[in-house]
Length: 205
Image (cartoon, rainbow, N blue to C red; front, side, top):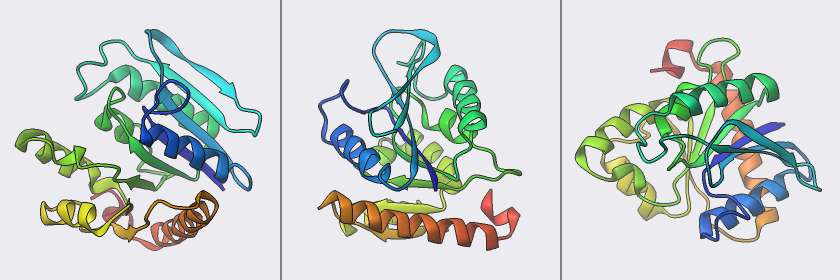
């Protein structure tokens, strides 16, 4: 399977828990799958920096201009489109998007052939921040076919606000990463199967 992980937090540039999780997940998945990571780094440059880790994880480090304005980054959307065309992932799994712009990331993922399904992990309640942004975010994540949460509490908060009602929902607590990654792959496989069976108008609704 060809998996693209998107997270603005990723080692070694960020010491956060999310960065550690996504970094560990990428390496665990790379044992049996092709893994591409899209992340950010300090500074500003037009083209992403591409590197390959010793265990084969392909990492694109973006440093977009004007990242403080996070509603939409045309530079990120164009770069993500190029990465997707080059790497051809089977699915995109979004983790953390501050500095990348959720709208830019999701708008860059093809909805027509070749359609690429989207998964999202809820590391926090960032989608619910403020009435205006949460309203925009609720519309954006209608594209998400699989939502993963570390707890029922976090997932329920989003469902109560009208998020992810059409998505497959799975609670997957953090734990041993080999087991965690294996469970994620099972969820990915179900997403790929159900996405192919789902009518096209429901995929992009």
